[in-house]
Length: 434
Image: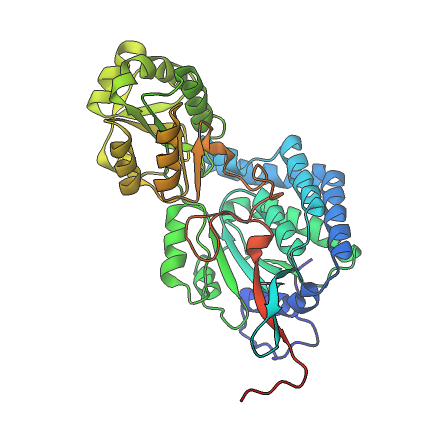
């Protein structure tokens, strides 16, 4: 299933050419016919890919078991193993996400705006694919298929470079959906997976401006920072999240307890999980003991400031919080807790320690809610809801490329529309410029 260079390649490969260069060239060539593929053909391919996943679930789980076994041998943290693990329900979720994409409108060819200018020319902007999208990602094998589906629907070819810890899973998933897409008529080499796990190749991928139109790093802060500092290819930063939930003095405390518990415990290993809990000092004594006991019972390690620990009291064991804890994306059953004196203090804390990912407030006071939603600078802001909802599927996007924490050209969960750009289409009738 490896990508091979088509005979029509513009340049002959050098004898020392690396796997990344060879596959990038092949995928770039495939991006041209894919960019004009009819919607019906793309939808048929997505449906075939979903069907193939269901038919090959035993092979997928067998490959994933190899990765899980290696992770356990290497003493990988339990939360990270959870990111890596697949089961029948998760594979079904991956397949269902492809079918959700089928139901979404195709953005390619959409006229964003059009009109006549003073010269009489008709000027319009039309959506087009980005071209060849490079993805560097860690751990979660579902990303392989989510990205393939989104890029296919938006007319983009893909060059994938996953983490070594998920190689067997990624290879199996890529081979299954790629074979199904070819049977449905998609161009050869539109979906390439780099299987060489040598980390030095990542640096080479970051400099492939000749072929790659954009690179998306999807992983922890270390990966995102490395890509941002070394890439010459344009990048879309995603994933790294230090996420807060602020419990305001006017919060419904029962509602707040459920939201905080869900935001931390449901899946602690994902980037939208709660990292830091901020609680108004006035309600801390009533709120923290009950939620802390519930969290600790679920296995959460609470790192609390001195005043927060005092408010928790004997209800649950805590550890002293360090300054570093409030800048940490834990991706595990750990969290930091601090007390604040009102909305302005909470806003200042989030401004200092947030990463622009997902931030939430729990309050019944609408004026406070409006200020929080308007003033917090993040890709997604929530009122009375768990930050775990920051997800392309939950936002109606079918799936997501990742969650952008920057402001150009996309922000928050990125779906098919975020994988497009536009071109100006200008129509005249013998027009010349005076």
